[in-house]
Amino acid sequence: MNPIYATTVMLLFTLNSFLGFSQETTSIKKEIFATQPNSVSIHQELFSELMNAKAGNIISVTFSEDFIFKGIVLSNQAVNNTQQTLLIKSVEFGNAIFQLSKIVLTDKSESYVGRIISTDAEDGYMISKNIANNYQLNKIELKNILQDCSY
Image (cartoon, rainbow, N blue to C red; front, side, top):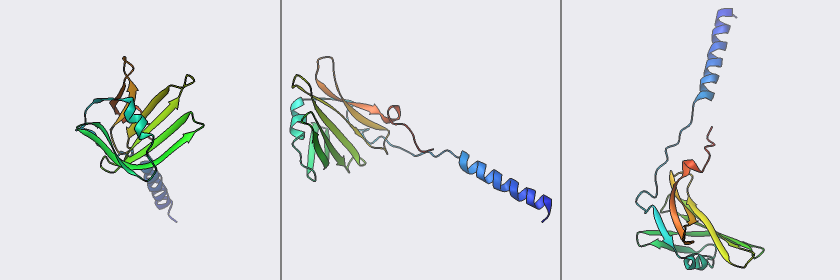
């Protein structure tokens, strides 16, 4: 085999391999909650009622008049009577998952944490308490929370 030909072929394979691994994959994500409010006040009673949902049921969660999260209950599991987690998946909001967890504290009071996220979206929501100790659903940017593992 001609040494120039062999060197050229080897150089092309090396270049092709280098360019193939150096390409950055970017996925186009959209704001699936763009028309929803940035913040919604939530009463703890809503969370208490949701904890009775059964897996397989289709339910609607009314956060506000303008924001209704309809989906199927994927699971609702309790652990040691101290923690319970509910998962609801919504097709209307890009297969976003609403995760709500109830934690029973040592003084027997209940606390809730959760979020609504989709790996295909730029935005989502997180449940938090405000200064007055009331629950709120606040819009978040997922790029600040989820790590990009596409490369």
